[in-house]
Image (cartoon, rainbow, N blue to C red):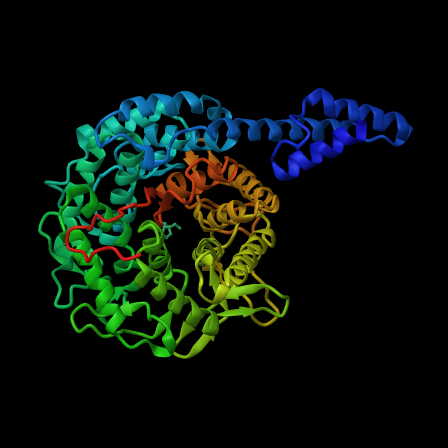
Length: 564
Ligand code: DMJ
């Protein structure tokens, strides 16, 4: 019985769940240890076993807390009509989530938020070492509180009530786009601000979030005034003048930018009844469908004046990534009625598998980059999200290949875990190679940094949801511990410049996506599947959950009747 206790503890520790035989108590496991030690005599490693017991008990306790959270009623399908009952739901969720506040992921969130609150409030991001606000060119010179908007739904889900209210108050009083004379990235503003506001609206029912999302979307619309309707990468929120990044091939717009608007824009039309948003993104889709694709692949660059591809560079990481993600998610978000999106996704992935996915000599599956007919055997941290995407798209894939795509997802998760495990800090580099004897390691100094990115943990979470293999929780826990150990500073969390150095320097930026994505995916990884179930919610590329639209016979303004 004693050893059974220890074994059960091990099971609980590795799976993060209670055992079938019922809840474990600390006493139960301690009894097991003592009995085992009596049998082992002087060779009994009592101190280590005691440490193990305490750790195990903590993990089991965390699981029980997350199971309590499972009862949180967050399915959007059961929401009261818009604007009614939001406050009541809020109460229920926050009360039920009281236990969640003790969880390590929540504590990390609190440290990140409190630091931003203290030193960077209202700025877009935080410099956690300098202890002041941080601004990047993606948001121009604005002070639009990107971290507040990006973090809202994570705060909500984690039950951080005061913090959520504080963020809401700031938004009500300060988030006003009318006079903002800043040139912002259309893509970044869409995924972080519009996505964040819409998710906060759907979760809390507070009208203010919807209102602000629509006001902001209006300001982005001039970006679509190009000869082809493919939007500019940047737009000035005041003048409406748009342009592209200077570094992009031949004045092109970027596939992952103009191809990552669909989810938010369809929701905007759904919520407002205004067809314009839906029409803008469907126009992009139609235009792409008519174009020739070299080797069946989508190049990352498209010129919005001429409608021609720029450089033939295809990537599932930076510049390409979320275009593929949004094809799949458009289908999921439409309650699987948007079969055109699904078919486009399947065709794109088929070509990617043929040309970009390989196995290294050491047996690691990787996704390379296609440059003018040549495969570069390098994979980015950003590309690691694809493990989760393949798993999410497995169900519904053609030719009964569900098992194949789930397996591919698992292989990518494994490769990305290796990229973490082969570093000194146990944090993943920005890019890693599979060449000349190299396996999942960065070579160039400017590829060795980790900037609090979420993609690997995102994939662990999807893989956990679809397989319940405890290794994904184990890997997520390793990453959480490494972040807490090496990226935590007194003024928040910072990226590090070299994951292969035991004494790394900081980049002094607390990215808003750390609060929106990295910590949210970690939290979800250790929560029950009932929290934001994947048949009711679809996460935008910034981890903002948007509900599946069960439209039935209703048609969106500007659309054709939905076909099953
Ligand atoms: C996030 O802003 C989004 O996930 C985006 O799609 C690309 N990556 C960053 C975080 O790494």
